[in-house]
Length: 433
Ligand code: UGA
Image (cartoon, rainbow, N blue to C red; front, side):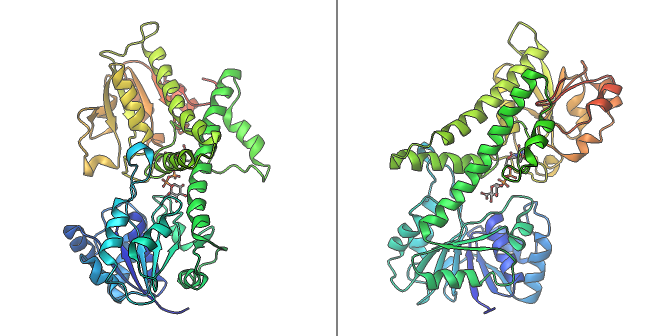
């Protein structure tokens, strides 16, 4: 493998993982971020995000001299063979991806890029962005390549070092090869395509994953109607290798920093390009409807007939969008909390990942320091994030804390028999109560 000089612009979980892992593979990496304090912390080996193995890889990179952190983006790219753009592309006006950060950096680095270097879009960007960045750079000697990331939060290092596939797209095949060669040593199929193919592969992947989850959640509702168990039905179909059983666990709806943003962005792309893709709109709408339905279940269970939760105290266990992260972006737990609050509920919530960060959620709920504090005197308990420690709570004690014996397990995490023995009623998703 040829050792390359790599610059990574942006040290979010994608950029930092990319930088640290490329350094582990032997490349010389400089990561740039405009946040001065973050750069200082990273130079000391301090990683702010919850990402297994990442702190160790960052420290190893620093110790070996293969990984460095700077504030000056132009200085970082000035010496690079390959420049990765790992920048935020949040949901902008009308659901489209907001490319302001990508465009600003393209502007900034235009004159600083070495001759013959390659710029790589790692961030999730609309189809045509590689072309747009090339036009902005206006440097015929610099190729722009699309190399989307497929990193799950909480598994980013694992997914980087053991990828299912590596997708690289560019009109300039030599430039695409140069990027693909950075990953030499990783055991994964390489998909070489053009930029539009790579950009679409990323959106298509996240859309398909979201579609599976909307399917699973609707299927759960169908199972409830017929008294069937959704796990049995999913096992019944999952043995067919054309279907499989991964990523089909029903829950409180899908969320996080990627699936909602990317499905909305793809919907905008379809609308703007006049391509009708009804499954996409249905996937998004199903998620919204699913959450409304879950809330109606809680309302009906807590206040039969009345429809209001005014003055009803509810305990929420779990706020992060999934276990293993403290990320609250587009968290289904928060979406459900908002709907409950609109109905008048008084919410007390506990999440083990938020004990230290303690985000300000005071306009929505009271953040408790312990599960007990959230549960005391509540009319019902809702499990909204699948933290394993909730499974091991002392449920006899919980029964004593709750004002009534109702537990809504919207992650199908708990053992209903165990809760029953503790005198509690546990309602999951897609299961007979
Ligand atoms: C997602 C994709 O899984 C990654 O492949 C992709 O690279 C990443 O987005 C990205 O675009 O960067 P992530 O946002 O970390 O990764 O979250 P997931 O693990 O996919 O979970 C998304 C949501 O689906 C969560 O709310 C989770 O709780 C829910 N989920 C997931 C279920 O309800 N059931 C499942 O079986 C799996």
